[in-house]
Image (cartoon, rainbow, N blue to C red; front, side, top):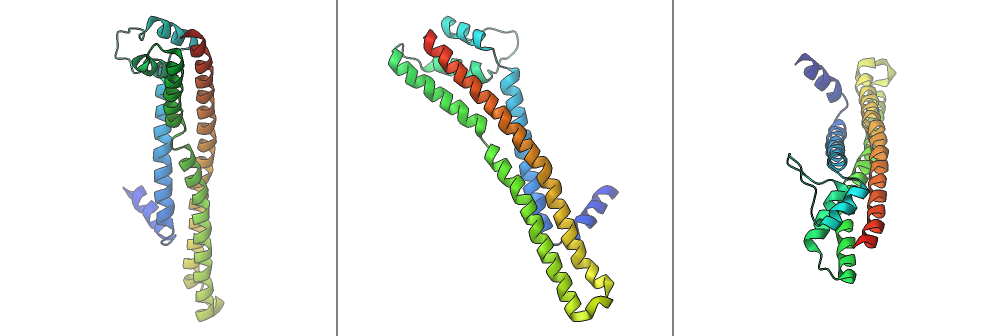
Length: 200
């Protein structure tokens, strides 16, 4: 409890700009955690490409003792099997539609995370400018002799800058990591399309 009070007291010194930075940071990390769990489930419950082709030829998913939520490739194959018409040309379009829907789910929120990570330091810079303007206003009224009055503006400038960078740096790193993960999964979908087109 004391830690929360100290953190609140520290952050409140950053002025009104600190609140958009906190909201931006919480939203960004909520989306990052959602994407991490999504990618984990898509990989954990998936089958390899060879097993996907076996599923396609058999016309159903492999039976397991536990409840099975299909991963990336397995999900595409199962959705395709539910919609296929046995018309090769039409089935090819259905396959591409299934893959496009899955591709959209893979890339969802990635750009938003990157934008939020980029916005955080800009908000910090805005807080810096606001804090320095407050400091200059104090100097114009009292001169440089009132250090306590100047400290409020300087504190606002430094805390907002620090908070913006603290939010942005891990956000940018996680955005890069998630982008690479999404690219890897998209490449798997491309490989799956090639194999499935040969095995309808």
